[in-house]
Image 1 (tube, rainbow, N blue to C red):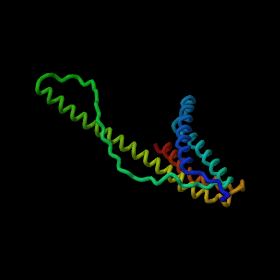
Image 2: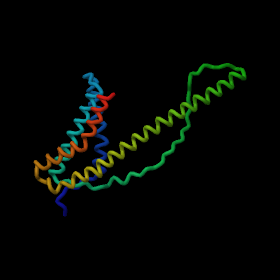
Image 3: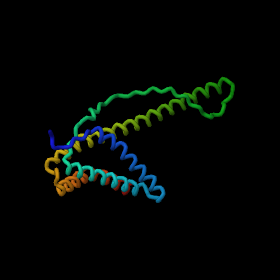
Image 4: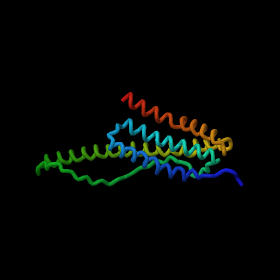
Length: 188
């Protein structure tokens, strides 16, 4: 029998998918009442999530947690969508003559092609963003946390080492988020 507490990576992943959006939404909603800027809301959200990450790691190291991988492998799949779209517009009537009918057909084709392209472009960007986010979370909650909790044998029941390792890993894994926020604020 193992002396370590085992946590499933799937449970951590699901809890994270709930906690991160709720934290960000609550900070943004509260920030609207205080008239906070995008920069300030980003810093507050990231700080709350960093503190939560620090506490999770430190307490986990102190209690001797190990992570069991059960998320499954992320596989890249090509996803193709076909959608039937019915677009209702308030385009004025062109007329009843043959020239007007041809003009309206050409206009309809151009508008349909532009709308289809825009839909495809936005859908592609959305899917790439979602897949990247899932990939990042997968790496953090399987690879990175598994590496962190390999130190459980050194930190178990040792408060100072747990805090030190928790702080070090929090800085290591969250510093780049602060760097992006500050660079975005000062560059743009």
